[in-house]
Image (cartoon, rainbow, N blue to C red):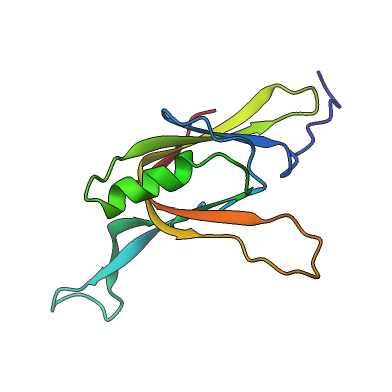
Length: 144
């Protein structure tokens, strides 16, 4: 329909699904990025400007933050890695529209915990205690 508005998605309406884990809501998900190394190549009989070829694809680590509760499933996933069992999982981040429907989906492939940060505590503070889990992974796709 001509003239129909197509507003961008809001960054505060999302949910995270981690294969096999039932962690509650997250306050922040960050670190979605992908880049390629650039390989420069030039043969001796070519002009002085090198060709630029794609090299390795690199993906930044994903950071998950959530308010500390009695749930320890994500910490236990990290602990399994500490004990020598690295279990890779698919992590799905879903953007939600104003009506509560799924509108965009990103899948993080072969993710595993690489860092955990426990909450900071301050006797004079009033903020929520936040846990952090950083995930290394081998790729991401936008599936919707």
